Image 1: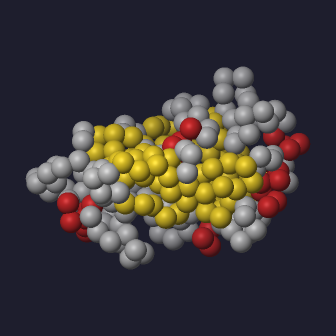
Image 2: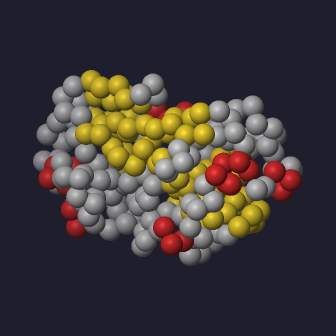
Image 3: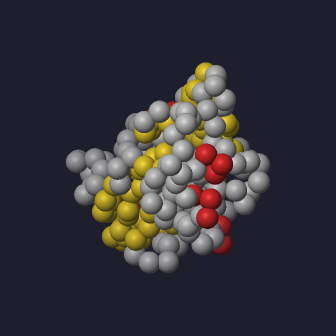
Length: 243
């Protein structure tokens, strides 16, 4: 099964409508910062996570400005294709990237916000900063989900404490929009619900960077909703389906 997902590179679109691959589209506007589950394509065409920054990361350029809403901004995520057959296969094919599988509780979900320290809209200069500079903050709209570790099913929980933030980009605030078609690959987490998290190697994450690569929510019947909607993976049989 081949799956499309957002690549590390985000494309800025200025006052025009644009479609990127089959699943991602956006229109009119400029830039913004961080994502959490953004996979990239490794040389063997399998998927690995992109480094992503939690919304609480401080940034001097993130100071909101009174004149920030001069016009709306819209931007889109590029997409890439990778292979997903089963959870065990996905982990094995990306063993250089994924460090563990954990069962977590979704403690909370933030309202739709910008990924600035206070959730407010960045200043216009910060919003239009050059994304080609890796030191430049890239601001975007989305939701932050706080996850609490219940148990490690395989490998390691690489976060520094029992909780970690998982950021899902996408949504509209006022005249600003971030289009993330890949958000439909799996249902969004639900506050109070459970999920299965794929952790990234601690060596791949710096200060303020989430260690969660993917998050697969668990439905009311205990089924884990992975990238393959036909996969019969549950919390009950998870330990028998590990790599």
